[in-house]
Image (tube, rainbow, N blue to C red; front, side, top):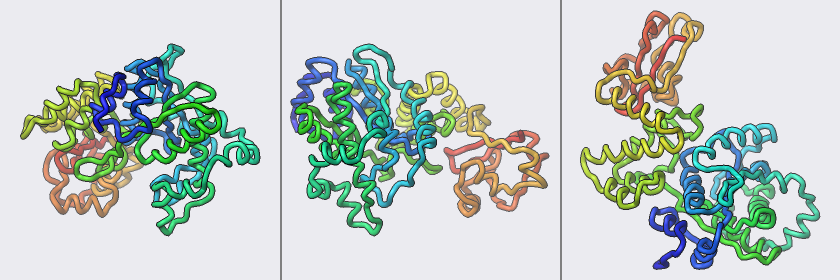
Length: 416
């Protein structure tokens, strides 16, 4: 595609690698050039925090605001009760209203680090779709909204087809999700003048449905834009690490662990991630991404510092880098390492080193911890750990001990 955008926002999306597809490049670009465009991304409240996989969408909203437009963070208080079936192998577990509200409260913490919420023309808004979904009357909704949807067309979307081909059936509850998401776009347009929905490329079918419904019911011209579904160069899903999801809330993933995730980026991904997850100029991202050998490590530290600063602040990024330098260069014990605190009651007459490795998060199971030790991948206070039978008691924790799994993952264990 050789379209050259007039608007700053579309230019950023295209040059930094955010753009997978758009329903009308020229129409959206014209709207962005004429004035403030309100745009939204929906976030279902399936956990108490978003993880790194959602960061590309959050950065899109941030760039939207930085280029003079109005971001809307739509919390799925209503749609979470149904669950998005898009490209899922099975049905999501259903959450109760109290759990959904609790999750929304946790997720809200993150957005204020990236967006300014105020009454300015480009001030961000946070809206919960329970505002209109919770009060829907079923028969009225079927008559006014359901008649605009073709089952034949809904079945043709890849996100639904992929599920129909599996053993796990697609419930009628989940099948309604795309209608509800389409209705979200209509209501956001009607209530707040929202002109654009953004999301990952797996949301294309849901976005197109919303555009079609809004045209039919309100005769409004609105737009959709999707980002690529990111995997790392080694094929892993973005947002996952060896120890599980990399959460954005600091109580679920410490700033040091978050920093370390970015520092461990593969060479091949560094330039691309600098463009997507930092605000450094594109030319600088390309220069840093092209470095080779040991020089690329400096680029990874810049990446880790920039991304951590955006979420947790500059002080947290500096502390994480300082801890990493102590741990990796001096073999010391950094103050900011993930820490497991055990009480004397926890220890009793002693706890096996295998159990402690699992509790510290360096291994998911005893079997994995034993394998780590057997394959010479574990260290205790920077010395090779070769005996899986070691027992640690309260006396053994008179000073904190440092555990390591491989060269890059470390944890402190201390007596509370």
